[in-house]
Image 1 (cartoon, rainbow, N blue to C red):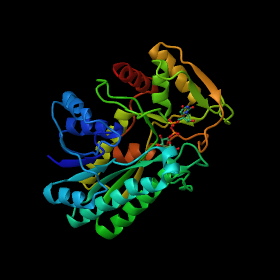
Image 2 (cartoon, protein in one colour):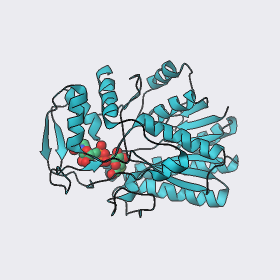
Image 3 (cartoon, rainbow, N blue to C red):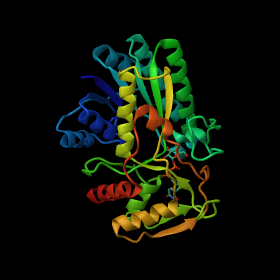
Image 4 (cartoon, protein in one colour):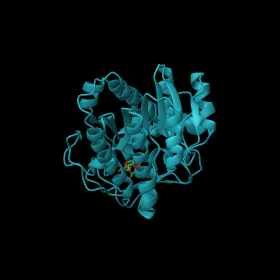
Length: 335
Ligand code: UFG
């Protein structure tokens, strides 16, 4: 069976993808430097799947260590999650983001070229579209100037990969994630935000258990039906499964061009107030929240046109936002 390298495999999306890979029969080797994850996740993956993935604590910023790893290991495909992802932090520390997200990508691609490895899946983001002119957003929507260094690393990352595909005989798929939420049904793995959560769902669940006093809803004056911003929230397990579909496309040489891009969302937009209502219903709690000023850099609305992924990858999000919120709540209660 194929052996797949998952960088950042102990992180939120990475760990769920490792579980799906193992459940589909793949052998997995994880590289993770624990910069935003915990080693216990390895045990938790094992307790879900019954199989412990190989694990290396390697910092991908070390070119020698990356070279050494690829000399030693037999790999059939790479899913590259390892990256920094906090939008606000990226504005304060842009160079950290270019080093963590771009330098490391280049090192991996160099090794892929050297060892003639071809199958590469990249974690991209709907952030590349900015505020799209048309909704739902198709993959043909223009790339807008990045709102943050983080967003820029995703745009530049895609370009680097595309150029490398053309020049170096690489085959790659970039998955543009919308808003991943939720946790594994077992509540053994989930999102582990460091410090005060920046994203909506962990802030909601932490408020509901009393770790945070009150949720600030950023902006009540957007041109939407209830005035709050709209996003496409996708269950992390559905998102993980999209990686398996993309990987299989590459392993079977079913890709149509050397570099392909797919939106990964549900196709359905939900406002912040709709999320709160749905959360209150599934958790049977009353959430303490207040509408405040808009958050800088936020867009009004984004949700995916998922037809391309449906048709080409044979993949479709199956879980509802209620299921995703219920799983996030169960995970929070376990913590
Ligand atoms: N929100 C609140 N209160 C909070 C947190 C978020 O009202 O405490 C709102 C936001 O304003 C936004 C929605 O909830 O309308 C979702 O916010 P998130 O921070 O959860 O997600 P974003 O859509 O802002 O972020 C996502 C990805 C990022 C990516 C970004 C690009 O998580 O990786 O889209 O816009 F960079």
